Length: 189
Image (cartoon, rainbow, N blue to C red; front, side):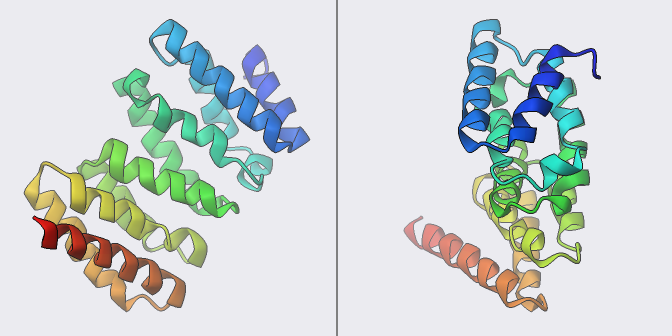
């Protein structure tokens, strides 16, 4: 991977830890994707390698580079989506920036919104770490609200209800907020 010049730039930028540098790099990635009409494989591979880097997992603002996938979702190929889903799930609980977990759970629930993402969210709901677990309801809420598959939407809602019994006050609070938003939405329909 070190032969990938973009990967070297990613490592240098994330090593600096400067939020402005991360934003500039995310903006550059988005512009390149827009110009090419596809998510370049060199960029994708570099970002996937970065997901495995411990310093990135502990970096404040790491979410800015993860959000690039969300913002350019239509240009992420099906193969890239498959790889991304596995990578996001594998690394999810190791992020220390809460916003990274929020963005990832949103990607799983909103961009994917399918059975594979639902299954990933179920597995993530069993992580021991409270902060990452507390954002799983966010992903389930998106599936319950937006899925065109009514059975999947109901399963996501049922899982949210089950999470009301979580041992963590933080998780139960997020579950309550998600259920309240869903109740308001259903009342309007």
